[in-house]
Length: 147
Image (tube, rainbow, N blue to C red; front, side, top):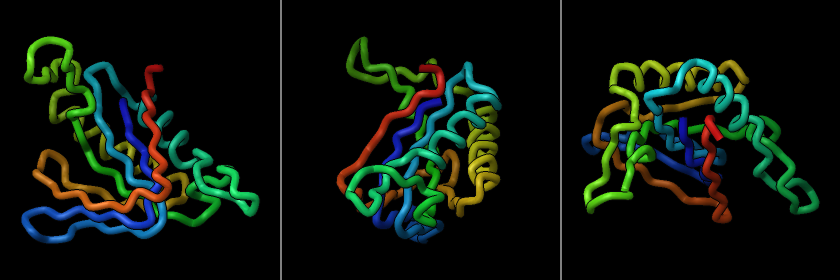
């Protein structure tokens, strides 16, 4: 699994002009599921992201996690993180999981994050979404469960 994790002051998702998810301070996570991924990858990423210390403490050091600051999490599926642009001009997606499997693991990851005690909202899988965010910092990390 691959995730782009962005610290945000707020973020939201719209589908067909309707806001379906919205968070305040927290993390926006764009998540892609690879064809080799399984439940162990869900557990790893959920634990890693929820406890990632990317919020400042009283000394302006990144020393607090999402749980520490009582932040929210917005999880959005984004298979294009598995896009391969090495050849040609059109990305290939052969390393991305098939939609049925990807949806299952995406939902499992959301549930694992909720089990960690944080509020999790989600986008809508396999749907055109408009994602709006205010990246706080900016602070952005790339996490790959296989590396």
